[in-house]
Amino acid sequence: MAIFAHRGRDVVYDRVGSGPPVVLLHNAGTQRHIWDDQVGELRHHYEVFALDLPGYGESDQPADGYRLADYADMLEAFLAAQDLADVVLIGNCLGAATSLRYTMTHPDTVRALVLCNPLTWNTVRAGRQAGLAWVDARLPLGPVARRLALPDAVVSRIIADQLGADGRRRDLHHSPRLTAHWGDKGRLQALHGLVQDFPTYADLDAFTPGPGFPPICTIWGEQNRILSARAGAQLDETLHPHTRIQLPECGHLPMVESPESVTNIITTFLSSQEVRPFGATEHPVKT
Image 1 (cartoon, rainbow, N blue to C red):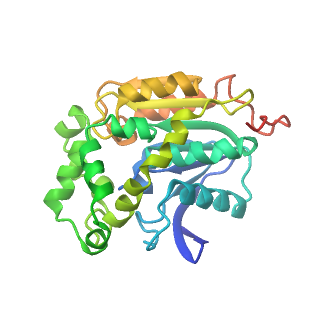
Image 2: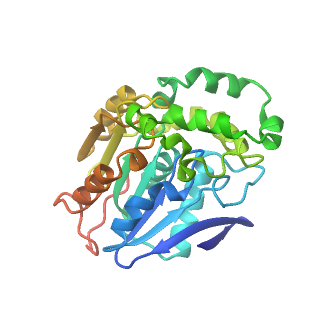
């Protein structure tokens, strides 16, 4: 475990392996260890960084800073501090949105993007959690979110709702890797800040990659209850990914629900001829 200081706050991350750089970002509510299976394989060929986003995992819980722009700024600062270029960004939900938002303004620093269940305005408002998001966006829930600690039973229910049928049958909603830190006091604060910022995610729905933009791989769990896989398919028509995969037995956490499949998708995509070789001198044109 290592610490990156950003704006006076600690961002915790793991760094393993050697080779070209890969950065993994988790979804809202979880933490860096959801990627442990993928890290275990990628570390043999890459230098892998897995971060706890601010407000989650072992990173600090700031009073603010939960906008998409804040996460993209943090990622930019982290890559600069580690002197990383020609990097592969892999993210789930919020992590995918952060990766895409950063790359929209810094395409020349990114080799490729793997976007699992990307969070956008359209994918969230077409999901089954749209009603809850509507309520949270309109009520003064911030003070409650800072004080509340969720009981274990509620945490398990939240995680179960994120899983596909197979994951629930395997009791993954009780896995410490998925339940970790959910019960910590104030953990809902970051989620509240995220919901307040949802309308700005519409920029991702409107974005069309130009010539030379880094190649994209999208992965969706067909049984995703949090975000809409159908809206994700519409997003693919805008993003024009090189690789688009839907996993029929997975929900919002495919890297844990079907780790071998997700790892194979990532490694196959990164080895494809469409992905610019590491160290190439030609950089994408900024759009």
